[in-house]
Length: 443
Image 1 (cartoon, rainbow, N blue to C red):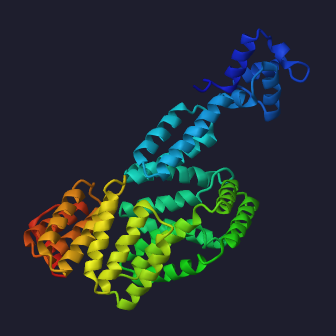
Image 2: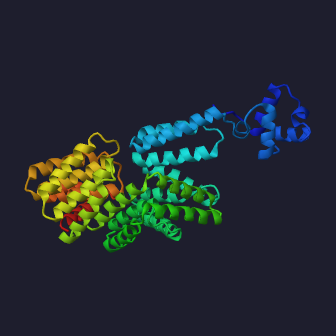
Image 3: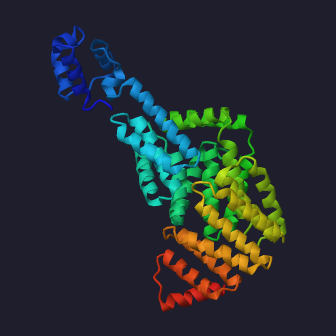
């Protein structure tokens, strides 16, 4: 476990264990009164003094300043990386357990603790614990805003916008997302991973709000920027890092430099740009989409599929099925949706995507005239949807489920889905709301 207490207490405990007086520890460079002030916590030693005391006490400076032995620090750093690997592998539960255990073991290492808190917040998001994730991210954002010399707020803003959209707070999502894009534009990074990630969140949010034109405009802007070659983006990140450093934003500068290094290793940009293409394809597929728009969407989706895996790949396939529906190929959409459901059956964290896949399957089955099969898929969707907490996001899905029950001819199930849509949006069921639900089905 980390050494307990303050720097002064560690100095005193080590001095006594070596049977040294304060004067002996001070030597000719310091005074015994200064040692006394350090040990009582009234003075904080400078890094140079910490190194001098550590050499005389037979320990490393890191132990005196932070209370963590080098071997223990190394173990914690490895555990943080293992937790991050679990998160990347889609095992949010394991990642959350690991990050929580790490935080309980860290005594006085703020940088490592911040990395673990960042991982913990992302694990909460991946688990669907939206409110807890937002609280954790807002704390990190506040700290980064308050101390930009040490912490970068861009990655936090990107994830926070995503969480607010999942919570149904579209206004907050747009405010945060547009703020992040504005900063990325200033830094010349509209072709980077952060812009792709926050861009796809904004595109989805504009579509939620019914603003298809703005979603498409942003898609075109970001897709054009994403055509930059990797070498050009590495240079852009390096220049942005230098600019942030000159502005005194050391945390942001460090983050951007790390992103440049990650691009050298060919890591994250292709996946982020592929996810942006999926979001852009979705913006081309509103309810009244034309065959031309669907064809363009398919081109984007084909370009994206090789860089995606897991839930991201499933989302790409769902949009492919939607494109096939617009092009008059419901049989192909049925096959694609069934494939998605098979692939998601063993994938952790895929429940929301599975719901979307079942809705897609039901829509395609209705179009092929397979009414009973469509109703079976819709009932399974309702069962799964009922296990999710109420929110504006789930309200939208209940509404879509109601529309499909109506198309499949089950009026009673349609009305029940509309009622649950109202309840998920925070409205209690009443005769007036029943009238509203009935009107929803007629639109």
